[in-house]
Length: 206
Image (cartoon, rainbow, N blue to C red; front, side):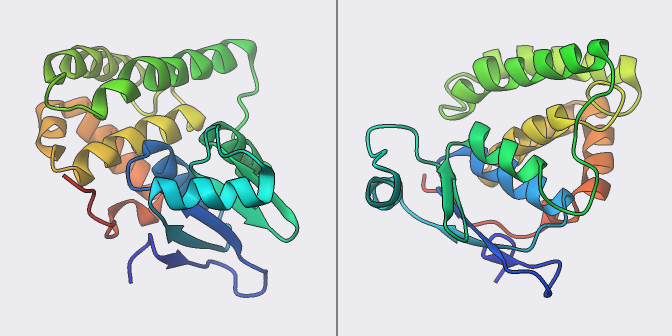
């Protein structure tokens, strides 16, 4: 059993149930945010078709994005954006909300780059390795300028980027990370915020 089967940081609370699919980087993002927020959570891994059937029964959403999904008592919601929003409002650590317009804008900018530019490419790496490297070049330079986290302070942008980096590593493409010194230093800081980061994950299908 590794993380990604189960973790529970507070036995005094009822666990949330997070259902993930191995083909979805958003699943890692949600797991990492839950870990940072110290939420008691049980994690299940299902094939996308199985999850689609489950969400069709509970929310009537079989034709929409259904991974990851979360169940909390009589409430359920699906899709990484919705699940991340829910997780960010729960838990014992401070929620991740920048306090200035500048920091909020920068957070949203780098989340946008992660989700709209990088995420579609990692699904077909190494076909798009050149394009991935170009994006990581820019990301590494940004980290050099900020000296610490993506926007200079710990934020949801770090959750999104760490989920994508973890996805590449689990797929067997983690060597690309070693090329970037600032990215490696950033990842060391991320692991302090997300202790679960280095635990075993289910292997993705080739």
